[in-house]
Length: 98
Image (cartoon, rainbow, N blue to C red; front, top):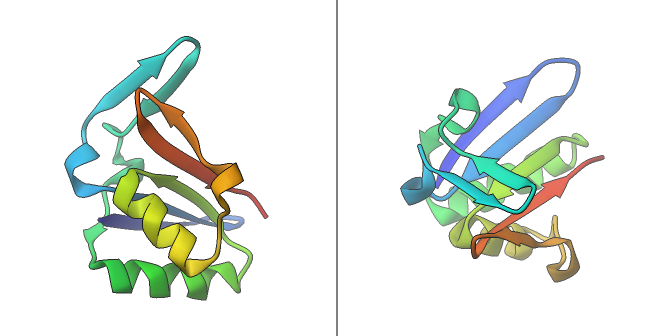
């Protein structure tokens, strides 16, 4: 998985499955654009991603999570629930806004 941490007026953690990088998905009026530099982060293991999510969740970070593996890690980390998962073209994603 790829993880990129954006620091501005608040922390935004972008996480996506590695194989989804540089792809775009559209369905009706929704779009996932993983071709931008927003998701261009460092490769991390599932356990590292879970720890990053837990750490930044304590700091009230916002999360953008895309892909089956990334969503699974977020569920394990306890930062999302199944009800918060949406899909575009069978690609799951979740937003966590604090």
